[in-house]
Length: 203
Image (cartoon, rainbow, N blue to C red; front, side, top):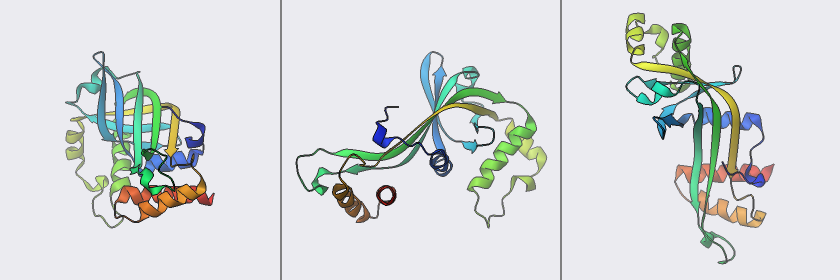
């Protein structure tokens, strides 16, 4: 990923937080000699330095993915930035966004306990605190049967590239004008980008 130095995220905890918050990723690999991608949730295990996930067994991407160097892309909030918001018209439109690229070696997981634990971690991450649903309460035979329809994997992380393009290359006064316009909408991406920009200015 092209990452100019003023857009680079170096803080490991910030990177991990984004991966946790925006866990629905795009996983790219080579399949039958061509680029191939699947949209799927991935969970981060910081202690193991891996991402866990699973394919539908009918998705052929898993067939030749073992040991490949793969790329998982996590996309954060993003929005259009109009030059009409600036103090001058001598400018062009742009796009602000946060994106994390995680590279790693793909490993198919066959251990039933590891598969269950990774599925349980994913469910617990997205279920609300007051939800009655828990995999431990579901009939084990049913879970085992459903698990036959997936192919679990882990990605052993080898490199992470992280980018937050939030108008840091513009003067503070212009960044404040952008924030003002973004906050004057109900669009959630706009509001999240504004909050991130505001946080940058407070550092």
